[in-house]
Amino acid sequence: MSRRAQIKMTPGEVRAYLAAGRVANVATIGPKGRPHLVPVFYIPDGDGIATWTYGTSQKVANLRRLPEATVLVETGVAYEELQGVSMECDVEIVEDTEQIVRIGTDLLGKMSNGNDEVVPDEVVTAAAQFVRLQAQKRVGLVFRPTKVVSWDHRKLGGTY
Image (cartoon, rainbow, N blue to C red; front, top):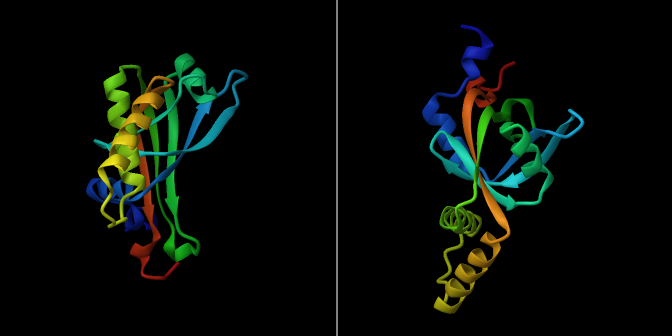
């Protein structure tokens, strides 16, 4: 079996890996044909991911021109720890306010995940108001993979 085949993640492993992550690097094509690369916080969405961003951002301008992106989520420092998923994606720009609110709410929930503190009702209400106000200036971005490449060097058991 090739090394490539040994380190490839299964579709279930890819979904679990994306669910555990927080930051994706998103590459779109800028107005002069060069890659425009930015990090975004994200939530899993089916086999892909979703996020929100300001409607006037460069990435949105790029995606209005060409609704395609390459997305990278990766972790690890040493070779034997490297894990990652690279996806070529078709991208949907979401402009429906309720869908944007859902994405923003899910993002906020994911960013506070792991915090076991009880959140007072007034904080929950303030967060919901914040998300709804932000949604007026934002769009949702849904990245649907057309090609997925993955690697998990931990599967090699520390060998090269």
